[in-house]
Image (tube, one colour):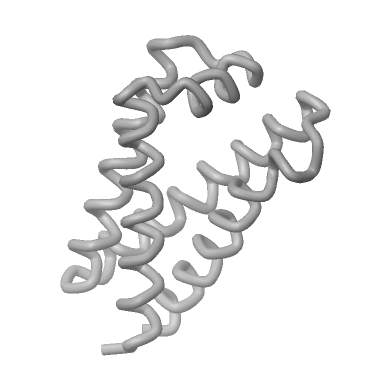
Length: 116
């Protein structure tokens, strides 16, 4: 098993689970940013659920490769969408950095999953 894949998939899973926690706990900074992007409260909960399911998919995907690959591809699309929302809202570059970092990490995990 590829050690880099395990480490990066776990890191991405933990980061997205932490992000989901911010959404579920209604962290003021997270919720304000999402509302600024035009996301409603019910959509915020849905995004949190997607992040938790994706994180679980990545972690289980360490042993079930197709699940890990699908979760990684899902996160590429998810964070690409997040980045598009930041650009459409004309946010400062610093506000888009977390989405960009997670997008790059998702792409790397996807590539490592394909190389398995």
